[in-house]
Image (cartoon, rainbow, N blue to C red; front, top):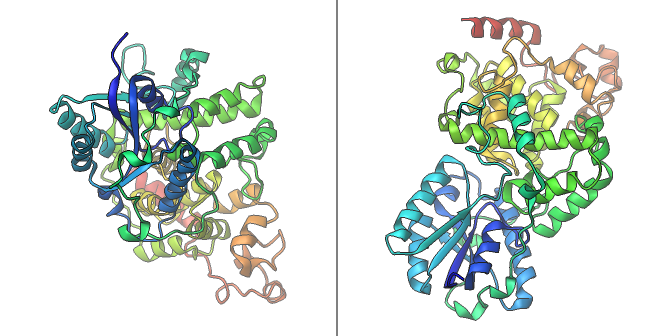
Length: 471
């Protein structure tokens, strides 16, 4: 039997939970004592423009949830603020650590960070153990027969499903009794958010493993009708788990086990497909890291987007005169959340109607989304912009009015987030600028005064964007 490490670190990042955690499981199996740590990464936080960033509150709640779980064992999360490449090696020295455990992250920054930490620690003869945890299959595990990566979703998903077995969703149960007691590092004070420039905010999706499991439990009765309800933003038809997947408050393995808990049906199959989309985009980012800053399709890398910045700012504020777009953006700005169908509508409108570079929209979503994930956000934006892998063809352009009528027919979502339009009935709610003066007055909302006129004309912009793509 291999000798156990005397003291180890388990470094949590995008896996803020203690159950079914691959790195934590192996750390607690292979070590006599494990320090569970989290680093508020200065390199990431210093780039955030808003001290009220809701994601920091979510992370904070996740750490508090972990503390509640392990406090009965006399342990706690050891939290730090700094640059991981400097801080981790110092912790190793201070604590007499023999090994470090963490789950792999596939974003370019994370790959480079982990490479630097690994090289530094191995130079000190410290064992470094990394594990697959946030996906079922990593980028190099689902490939074409010739060894090249897939760039089309359907064949990728078929290969993914053909490779899948119950062994891929094995549950990792850590031995929490090996976690280091709080008094083993008495000089380590918990990070205070105010001290690092952030404030706690109200968030609509509370953080923590308990909350994630509750969300999954609540989804049990609606997953079977997921395929019927998922596109309607006024319905509670989605799982609401995207932020929990993003920060790893629930294991992706547990989600898959949940799907197969009952016989497969259409609703469960479609939700599984959405999870596979997530892994497809992770694979794309892994194999083609340039997509973080450039169009995947080379022919569109030099497109000269003619849109006006004033229009971009109107889009950001939800003041375009297109009710479904404005409602979506106001919801995002207020809550940090946007329904997936609305993400497609809002993104398509920015690129195909306002003719604005998709990267500006992607960056705005990156600043606002509570569930922001680089791979999925980038993949979704490039899909809408027709510049990415397996993207919507450039000549297929969302009509925001038709999308609005189809997915919010009575205007329930619109009225919630654009309350000035609440007096309009379903006939006019999608196109209030076409209402008669009598109807506007009756609705107590005059378009052009109480609500903006459409910033552009969809039909004209469609012709312009087709010319742009055709060159």
